[in-house]
Amino acid sequence: MSIDFGKALSVRETPIPGLVVLDLPVHGDARGWFKENWQREKMTAAGVDLPDFGPVQNNISFNDAVGTTRGIHAEPWDKYVSVATGRIFGAWVDLREGDSFGAVFTTELDPSTAIFVPRGVGNSYQTLEPDTAYTYLVNDHWSPDATYTFLNLADETAAIDWPIPLDDVEISAKDKNHPRLADVVPMPPKKILVTGANGQLGRALREEFGDHPWIEYATRADLDLTSPDLDAARRWRDYGTIVNAAAYTKVDVAETPEGRTEAWAANVTAVAALARIATANGITLVHVSSDYVFDGSKEGAYATTDPVSPVGVYGQTKAAGDAIVSAVPRHYILRTSWVIGEGNNFVRTMASLAERGVDPRVVNDQRGRLTFTTDLAATVRALLETGAPSGVYNVTGAGDPTTWYDIARDVFELTGHDPSRVTGVSTEEYFAAATAPVAPRPSNSVLELADHGPVVTAPARERLRSYLSA
Image (cartoon, rainbow, N blue to C red; front, top):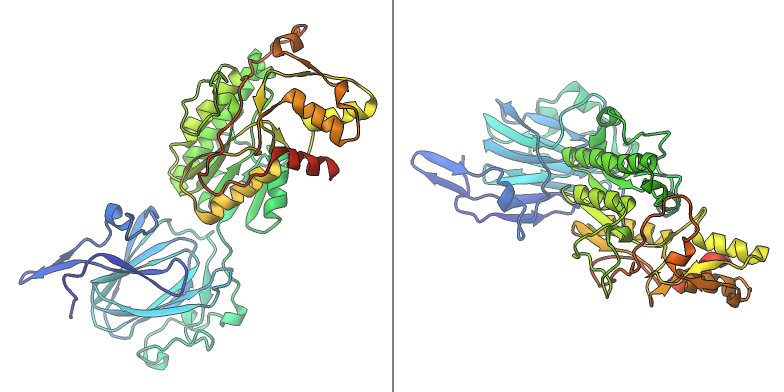
């Protein structure tokens, strides 16, 4: 057996997206050789940049004879394949949904090379030397409930040029009978779960992502995030993303004993459960935060790096949820303010009052920007599709900050009514006659909109105009 000693650790791309070949440093002398077959820190570093795929199992297939051939199997997990002894001819076929479906790559592997095989890419090999030990790491345990996809080794479309003709090698009967490419059902992408699917953001996410077999929209009736059985409620390894659009948002009721309990359950306990599941299963967790994590005392706009300082129960629960999500290896925290979407909201209320001839008193000492759920949903998609770095992203409408009073006047004007019918009052005046608990509001809810990633935004007043004309 000839091994290429002394190579530097490097990665070579292939025609199949995500399928990469690694050159491994192998050190040898008269006693034999040594290599670091999988070294997480080095292999996930810049310059090599393999996914930190979190292997949970190591398997070895020992093959006595030259020509032993294993079928083309695409599995619902990632694999890191290498050879301990001997040499193989490997063939990989992309069996995932998408433009690269059917793409083929072949190469030889010896102990100085390895290959990372993404979920859904068909993997097969043929031994070129006796006593070949083929080994692979996987990031999920085998399950009879998992979805597998197979391709016939002799498929004419893939046209794999096997070094040893298939008629002359040992192949299992099952591998001989797998379907041709034209009959293969492509492996769908990992699932996306959207919680809070009936809320304002949940509806916008449904509009943004559409209905597909791999996207699940769940309400509390479908999935109780506070259930002690949540870990067993799904086969979580089949999910790639959880978008948590569920939240307790009754800021005033949260100041009552019952509301406080419900707010902590929905915004902290449920988030902690999702974070635990996401961490254990390599899932990306998308979490929606709030301007209420700040006390509003800052002079300028709040940056993503500003320390939180919530003053009410709702804000405290949101800040706690943010802290929990920030510990998930793959996460996005979308901090937003003054959210408007389909359903009951401030803009709809003002439009209704204008139409009914009611002249409202509206708070004029709280400053911020409206955020439309269409922009929030589009930002979620952009972050996921671009693979943006984990972290906090401010997402609001653009333009000069305004007050609720300014927005109410805009609503009246844009719906053809006299904006002078709106009267501005302070927060203290507005709630002076309240008999139920009132949550403290941040007087400054302005979030800094620096260029820090694929955040989708537009001037808030333009969005307001479009929203009212829809």
